[in-house]
Length: 126
Image 1 (spheres, rainbow, N blue to C red):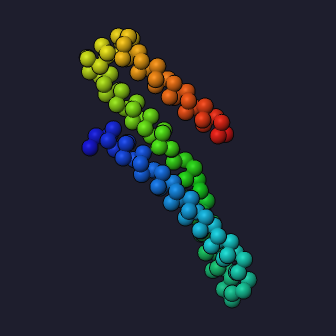
Image 2 (image 1 turned 30 degrees about the vertical axis):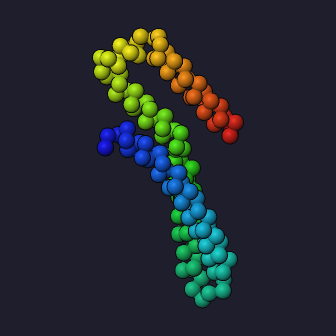
Image 3 (image 1 turned 180 degrees about the horizontal axis):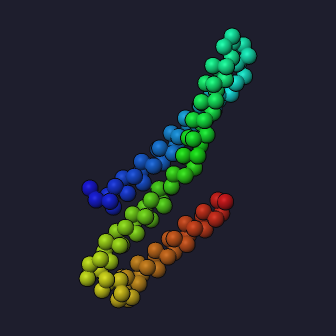
């Protein structure tokens, strides 16, 4: 498989990875709270608090990890960019892109509309 194929595959997997990271962060966060709250009830409260610290650290890492994973749409746009770059390396591709009429012009127009639409969605989400 080439890099384009891997990016398409990754775009479908990344959503599951992000969801898993969020779920694990929630579960481990609750466990960390439990360890902190119940540490005074155990004779070896230092070990219990240490376990709580470890769980809190893992929770923080998973939370940060899930927030930096790009969305499926971003990965698909990267894959499209990679594909266009490969097409632009060929003489026929450069001629088609530089033509500026017909299908090439319509494709650029649709791509601009798609990018603008997704950027507006991102801005509205902030």
